[in-house]
Amino acid sequence: MIADSYPSDEPEIYVENAHGGEYASKLRGYFVIKDTKLKFNAIAFGRIGGHNISLNLTKKTLSKLKELGYDTENFQLVLQRKLVEGEVNLIDPTTKKQIKP
Image (cartoon, rainbow, N blue to C red):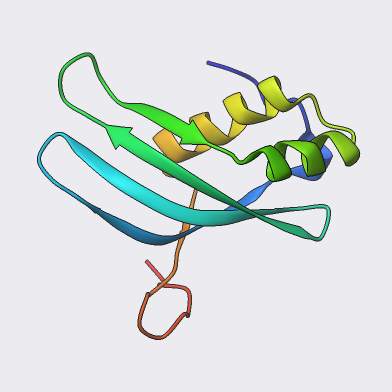
């Protein structure tokens, strides 16, 4: 397991849209770090070989992370781990409010 590199600056992840099929789902959302909201896209894979996330951050988002002082490769690993482990907040696409478990 990958330990969080930024314990005092934990990213809060919000998934706004998730749709897909039996083997993979497309995720769209954002994360908040140091009072900054940054978007992401990802594909979540399951079943064969276990769970995995293909995370996509734009050049603009990567540049902002560097500006905030983060190692972008390690930060992406933290985001991927949190997505795989379900450490996310789900947003209802119609009301734009957080879904409470």
